[in-house]
Image (tube, rainbow, N blue to C red; front, side, top):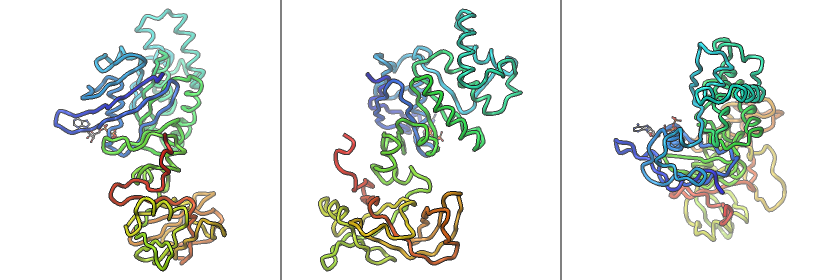
Amino acid sequence: MSEIILRDICKSYENGFQAVKNFNLEIEKGELVVFVGPSGCGKSTTLRMIAGLEDISDGELWIGDKLVNYLEPKERDLAMVFQSYALYPQMNIYDNIAFSLQVRKVPKKEIDKRVHHVAELLGLENLLKQRPKNLSGGQRQRVAIGNAIIREPKVLLMDEPLSNLDAKLRTQMRVELAGIHKALGNTIIYVTHDQTEAMTLGDRIVVMNQGVVQQADTPQNLYAYPVNRFVAGFIGSPSMNFIKGLVIEKVGIPTFCTENDGDIPIPDFLWKILKRQGYVGRNIELGIRPEHFLEEPAGADTRGEWKMEVTVTARELLGAEVILHFNHNGQDCCAKVSGDSLIDKGDKVTLWIDMAYISAFDLETQENITLRKGMFS
Ligand code: ATP
């Protein structure tokens, strides 16, 4: 049975603004689900509705076998960790972690056992006698997490818990959080606007835009099979490149005509899809991930070949990889090539595209045309 079910959940604020529209999701026990999307897409509002901090305008929210729409937050068996975490400055770390059990009058021996267990899990054992002011940002955030998990809530809700930390600490905490989740096995719903955080943490990711769930899927599927242009562009860093053009058959050859690059042969597999779905004679947009630009042709197989002459406007060395920036039909594009690449800023080079991984999008509906039907059923 699912641990949490959101059924057609909607949120309209008093001013009439619809922040969340028909949100449907079933979350399994022990899953770590990440809500991700740009600022204002409704992810915090959804989390707050689950927590009971925000009224649900319409729909049903189930936790376990209970309909909880009208239950108070404390009756929902949830704990929440926020971006800004308030620790009690006058109390030591032990008491900060123990606080929620102390107010519930849990026996001291039991509290002691649980505090030490949580402290061990979070690497805070040597800090239990310290005051919060003596701790680093990451350590303080761990205390806040300890305070939330010590009650052993069914579900842990986390709203951008790492966003106050610097980049290095965020990465470290991300790995630690994944470990904590594995050790505890509890259900976690985690909100972030950072797609890297979502991809590395989530068992499943819910991508939202303008109050609407775009796709709920595993990180791998989101990356390889985005259902629409929004998800394709949002997931992946650097973003997918998009190129507009017309699909036609030119002297018997399936062709994609773009403004500047002229005619590009369409590989067999793509032509079949486009033809079957009635895209011949229509404009579409092709999506190319930066790593699918190659310095050499992909090989003599059925993939088809497409090359572009580009002028590199910037080169960013990331270590093992180099990001090459170039302009295409007035649009910034980038390619991710090996760190050994000698291509430099200002160079005029040929980049090949591995057509096996290409995606195509409908210009009106923005849907991914290249998805095989039934892929997600
Ligand atoms: P962020 O990452 O910036 O926190 P978010 O995806 O979590 O964004 P929400 O905080 O859920 O977004 O807000 C969703 C939308 O609802 C936003 O457009 C926001 O301006 C609007 N909103 C939030 N609270 C209210 C309110 N009390 N009254 C009216 N509109 C609100």
